[in-house]
Length: 146
Image (cartoon, rainbow, N blue to C red; front, side, top):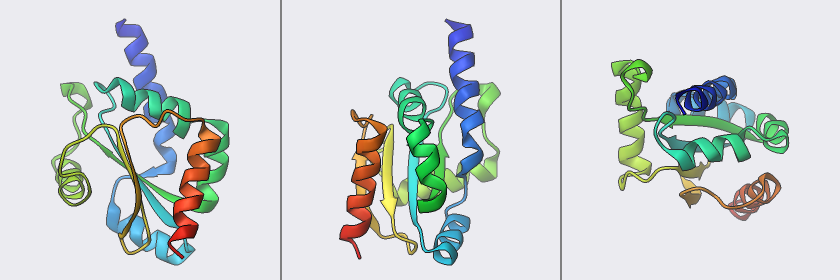
């Protein structure tokens, strides 16, 4: 079990290269590139549905092809294991982001924002859909806001 959890966590962290950890940086990039922002609140080392959502949707071939051209991604992670703890600065950034967009502390919780930080759509919990359907939902919300 420990080996499986380690594998899942390393897969989760490896895919994080597309993901930013600072909303201000994301807003700047989104404004410059005319993209929306997708924020995912997760518990990378304790939340099964979070790990599953990253693995099945965010790490899917369809999403990893779609996201770079269409979204600025932000991961607000809240790990529990001591070995995975974030810096105090990052923890503070994530908590501030949660205060604004996820005050109920739901995990996983995904929010689509425009470049100014206005909520366009949110998904509570694991999104029980295919990556293509998730992308369709994102596109629908993004185009409905224009």
